[in-house]
Every structure is written in structure tokens, then in C-alpha cells.
Length: 282
Ligand code: PDD
Image 1: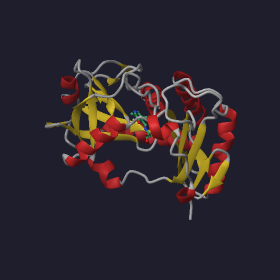
Image 2: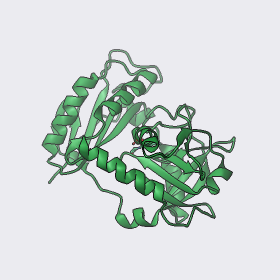
Image 3: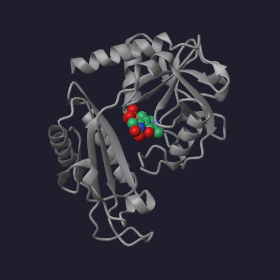
Image 4: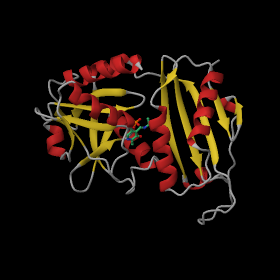
């Protein structure tokens, strides 16, 4: 079987991997994470992911975590041991194990946990029909730019969407501006330009988002960071969501509004095609 876990220096089967009940990740969601993937067995954009992880660690003041260089070794080692053909790599670092008090514990080593398992790609049927979504008030905290493990609001919103018979939720702030989907960034084509909400505390600026923002102009698709109102969202010619695991997937419905023709749009398809082409060239 493929797949493996890593806990503080040890590799072991995923089912056997354990952390303490007093881990602050468990007690307080006092941790940060990354999700990476491979293409043709090669880790994609590792440097960018490790840089973002370093920023997250810094933002939550988790000190003495392994360096990016050490983490890169752990990831490569894990990937090799996992025997996965195409892997998704989950890496989490928490503040460590200590009696449950709000104070940052002193002299505590961060907990480093990783799982490497076979990537489950988004089913083609869903990609080809496009995502149906509902909007939901963005009730998350004010630092969504930190890739924190505190994802309860995302989990609740996603499950509300599923219970409503759709695929995902798109968060909208109290000011009526779109932030992001429950696990991906949002792009909107207004007929002239591709828009995506600006990086800042309201979104997790995705690695895929950054890649798409660079790629679009190369394909002569004007793209920019700009606030998107919920009205603009619903009138969009095309919408898509980006993340490491799904790359870029069209959204064909937002609440009662049908987007474009109700089928996945040409821009998303074009961008994904080119994205994959470039991934394979590197
Ligand atoms: N999530 N926004 C949120 C809230 C996310 O959780 C993610 C990714 C992204 C896209 O980031 P990237 O392109 O770097 O993957 C945006 C990962 C995949 C997850 O939690 O599973």
C-alpha cells in the first residue's frame, strides 16, 4: 500500500501515527499547515509552499520549527518512502505539547506532522459540469492570510453547501465583497478582465492563484487583483476556483444565478491546459 505519515522525526504507517492529547494543535488549533502535490512524481512549487509556511509560522510566532531546508528534506524523504504515484502532501506544524494554558509554552519543541498519500483528483464529471455554489457570510477570523489549521468556519460552510445540494460555498464579507471559496481562491471574468480579490488578511493567497495571475497575461488575458462585489460575481461571464489539489475549476452557479452558459467557461479551460503544460515542462 502507498502512503506514509511522519511525526517528529519518525516515519510510520498513517493509521499508527499519533500526537499527544495536549498538543496545542488539538487544543487550540494553534498550528499552521501546507498542502503540496506532485506532478509526474515531482513536488510542485515546493519553494513557494515552504516560503508561505515560513510566513505563517512567523505570523503566529511559532519559533524553532525546522528550517525550510530541513522540511524540504523531510518532504522528499516522505514522498520517496510513500511509494505514491501522484501524491498529496499535508504538512502541519503546531506550537507543541504543553498543559492547556493560553500562555505560549516555554522550552517546547513544535510538533511536526506530515502525511503523504495518493492524490485523489477531482472527478472528471464534476470538472466537466462545473461547480455549483452558494454564497455565505464570511464569518472567519481576520487573518485568513495565515494558513492556520483553524478551519472550523470553512468546514461548516462547506458542509452547509453540501447539505444544500451544491459543491461549495463562496465567502462574502459584511461589506458585500467576495473573499474566497472554502478551500480555494476565486477568479471572475467580467467580460473584459479577470479579477481576483486582492491579497491581504481576507484571503489565503494561493500558490495556484499567484501562478494564474502570472499566466493569464501571457495568454493575453488581462488579469488583476480587485474587489469583487457579490452582484458582480453573479453577473460574471465566467468564474473559477483555484487550489493546489483542483488546479482551476469552473463555477457555473452562484445561489440562483447561472454563470455564463451554465457550462464550464473557455478561460478556465485554456488556463488549466496551459498551466498543466508548463508544469510538465519544469
Ligand atoms: N487549501 N484559500 C483557502 C481557504 C485554502 O484552503 C486554499 C488551499 C487556497 C488555495 O491555496 P493554494 O493554491 O496554495 O493551494 C485558498 C488546501 C489545498 C487545503 O486546505 O486542502
